[in-house]
Image (tube, rainbow, N blue to C red; front, side, top):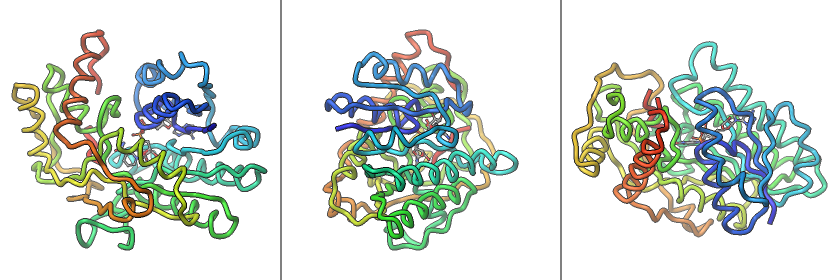
Length: 327
Ligand SMILES: NC(=O)c1ccc[n+]([C@@H]2O[C@H](COP(=O)([O-])OP(=O)(O)OC[C@H]3O[C@@H](n4cnc5c(N)ncnc54)[C@H](O)[C@@H]3O)[C@@H](O)[C@H]2O)c1
């Protein structure tokens, strides 16, 4: 099988590349190495993939790339590229969100619609499309009502995927990820900052009172959902919640990281942030019945793996890395 992974140098994209290569797929990684976080971190994410002859990296912006030849050469496109982060999506930076999340997705879908081979597109959507949901666990039938500009762009791209499916027959599947964690997690995300804080880095900036609840999903479960979606017999334009199935408050998460590391997490109290929802929690019944997927890694085991990754990185004298996104 041959695949394109967009956003290949990022957290989810690089984990997905490694998993596909381990299954003997050929992978073309596309990434524009955006400056949302440090480029060396992204280069390190791709170190194993680059060493594999079945991997090819194209350092291009999806909006600028001539994608025609690429899409005609592969079976599946795993579309992970985006400008992530809820808190940064207000103000003038929204232009980047429009570019990377909406325009880039539309250009990719056009290329696929105009291709001969018409590879399937698996799109990395987000629980942020729901905003403050009316009930939990939230199902795919609930009305999406984003609470941040980021969520609006992720929902817009999801609608593009759906309508390129219904109007033009492009086979798209959208996966709504609920807060992803694990090795290589983005430096702006909560478990990354928590792990660094407990291992001697800067204090963890806690936004609000810590009562916000998240459904955390381990990255290997996200990877498995992508691979399942690539093969599943589902309607073009379908969307599925991909969630770990728990409901953990930030306070509980802080305590868990502290107990796994054997020391207290230093905390820096901060005001609550606009755009942050109070709770996320997704039903995965549809993904279980239609994709044959369910989460397998529990929070404690997943956090253990993430802490081990941070310990190794610190031993290798990597810089301690730097708001603590929980979405
Ligand atoms: N991490 C999470 O908790 C989470 C939750 C829900 C949804 N998602 C979605 O999952 C995907 C991956 O997230 P992540 O945490 O790995 O983010 P990330 O920032 O680590 O990776 C995204 C990558 O996309 C690249 N990129 C952005 N715009 C591009 C463009 N126009 N052309 C080429 N490359 C481009 C960036 O350079 C970056 O390396 C995103 O679509 C994100 O919205 C992530």
